[in-house]
Image 1 (tube, rainbow, N blue to C red):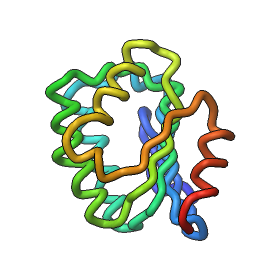
Image 2: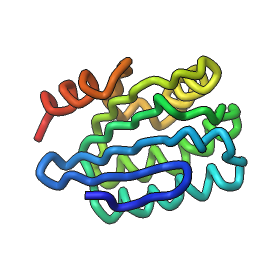
Image 3: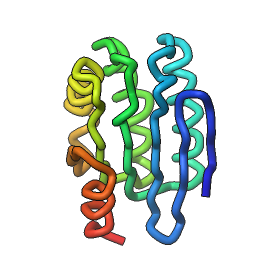
Image 4: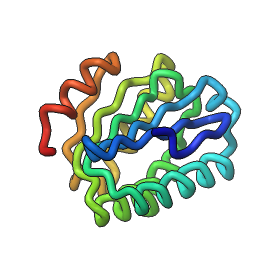
Length: 136
């Protein structure tokens, strides 16, 4: 079921799998630092409400490069609170944009991300299969 929709992100929550699907749109290229933070805070509120154990982050259409200071902000303001409500497994479908991909991978090495089981994939099917094989 879709729980959030913006020009940049669509969020779906599947209660039976305790899984949140976070899908970036090509419009993410137009994000600013302020709108990026706002999107993450909106999504964090939904993570706190639904308390997923797993997340599929489809970044294949993410074209926003996350600067190092934003990577640290995401770690402190999104990763740690998400872990505290039960998010444990994260499957990431990598961006087609090499700079965005690198910034995503760097963000996932920030302090706080060590609490998660994180895997990277080239496509959604592989990511979903891995998540489905994890704790239910």
